[in-house]
Length: 338
Image 1 (cartoon, one colour):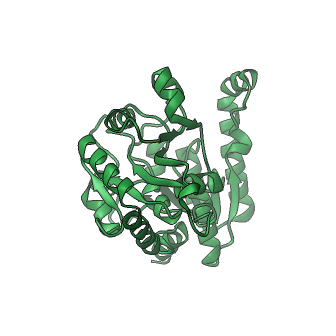
Image 2: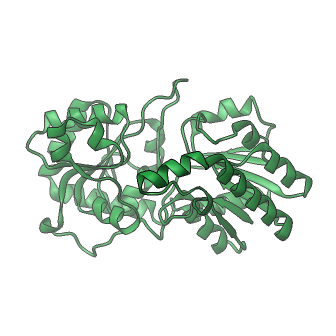
């Protein structure tokens, strides 16, 4: 398998690649950031913008060259950024099965040729609500739903036991800013002004008012062990999603749905039928539908430590290893074999 994507520890690509290898596949990874790194300083970022198109072409050429050289059974990508229909058609002519795993709630991304990706042999989405839309555009049997998961190499408890002095937040949210998420966080902040509420992610410092940002924003990013420790040392981890796309699509679950329990954290998740398929509400996780309910449940679980710990343990046992990306890779291999 030639696998093109971003393989940082904790990513979907990293988890799936390791899972494929556990299933006996030889995986040749092609790291996108080797060609498309954006830089850290302002001059580096400016240069990256000016040369983005050339570097994207070099990335695709590297993938194509590797296909010619190795003649793999499968070309696999997650989201397929900067890979065009031309590449998938070339792979098809070489007799290579092409597979795209799509873990996002909409398709409107710069650098993504969605029509090219839809021409792949197998298109897998982690969003169940996209299946009817895909069924109108894809032949029967060429589209599948496989849920998100967690990366076992990154998402696991860091501490053997968590004492009260280990907790660094009453309530924590780890994820990049969006307007919908901001409404949840501001509502929670107003409802529980004395709770230690912490947010981690890009753009929060710019989006929140300065007084609120200085109190709530903990860091721009946590990944791998830092992420796992942040989840495990929060009394409550809130699972909220990006908000609605222009067509009305909205996340029901996301990677954090599975990462939080895998890290040993207690999870309060936006309520929907899909999350209830994966976890028992009231015994493993709990859910909420509006700010008032979220605030009420935060108050309850902050006051009931043993209940919260017991539920987090049960959710961890449910998720590990059943909801790992290693398990998801096994599902994909079964589709390939079929």
